[in-house]
Length: 175
Image (tube, rainbow, N blue to C red; front, side):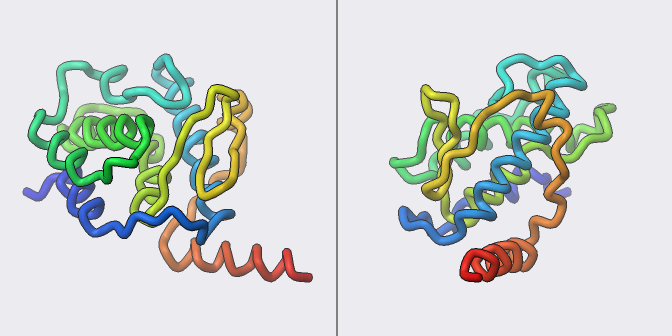
């Protein structure tokens, strides 16, 4: 059986990391979707440290990825990746191992999928001391988890849907 977390390292190994802004609006919206999903999980399980925390550990600290699985993914990341990129990749792998374990879990969307999508598209995130999350040249306010839990979901995060989102934004901006 191919485990879900193996796919994370495989996808990260194919990323062309970029320092130039390419998809600002969709990247910022993906971060907002992560904040929404993370808020839902935090409110459901009572995990601390929102918005960036180890959800899997909050659910079951006994089900963890191997050190080798974590190292495999983290070793792929470029040296300029931020603390938060490294931690969220690690936590996403622990979460995927928990999910693969078939443990009874809340019926909520995968919290890390939006952030992993940001990374797979070649961008980093950073959390500033001012409570802003930087992505692709845009600052997304951390805000309040209760507010984020209520925002409209950004459900269509396929590459095609994200390209369409950016194209439509650029068209509106140019009018």
